[in-house]
Image 1 (cartoon, rainbow, N blue to C red):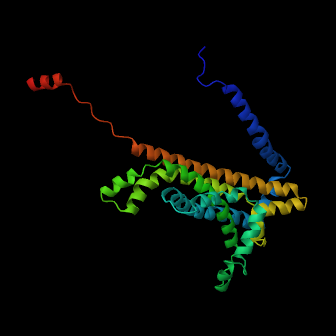
Image 2: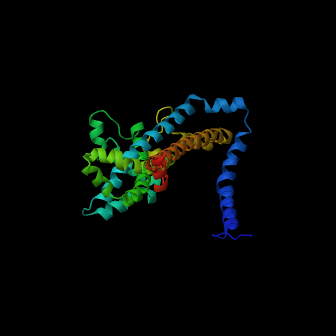
Image 3: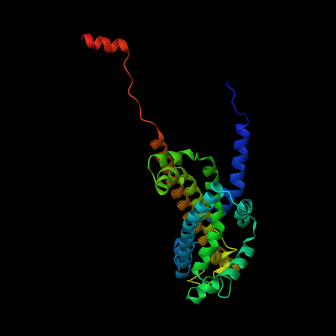
Length: 294
């Protein structure tokens, strides 16, 4: 029996399956089991209630918008940190990770104080009739704040490994900076941007602590789905809470599968483009000479 080059496969697989079973599969399966106590009519009534539909639409829509905005700003921040040298660069690089370590409640209070009608930035929006806090805009701002670090940390390593001579070669061929970025740099960064988008979206979809402060929590307007689930739990409506949670699990899982599928297709397409064409074999000199005599 041949020995494996990397021993410990059985043990590693067992640890992996145990982790997935104890911390992922079993907790999520309890949601399904708890929801099964409802009839289909009761389940449908709960998840299609106007308040529930509004919270689902707000959570999914705000998460998608915030993830898209975070992808743009995260790409710009990663580009600046990798391609430029300036005073305070290391400090800014460290500040990017601050939303990871900052408690979400603290982030919500800080964002509310900043974007409120009397805040440092919110007062200017309030002067033109735009509310930065206690509105849907505030929800997007909070989710962008939490999502940008995911994009930066997924794009930054790829930019570090990208050879600048590729852009220089494009410039020598007459390409402008924008053309070199779109045709040379962006195809290489696309998989990492998609990954950062997926991470930012998944974080935004389940965010509660920071959003609950800045949203205003108005039912049907600024109430997110996690807050509605918490409201159901506070009312001891456990089947209703698990029904809403099940819809969020299914929706988020389906969207993440779609995003990952797009990322895989993008990587396969890029690999196909980079693959050199097959060269036709050159016949040996003897065969060429023989054909010449025929």
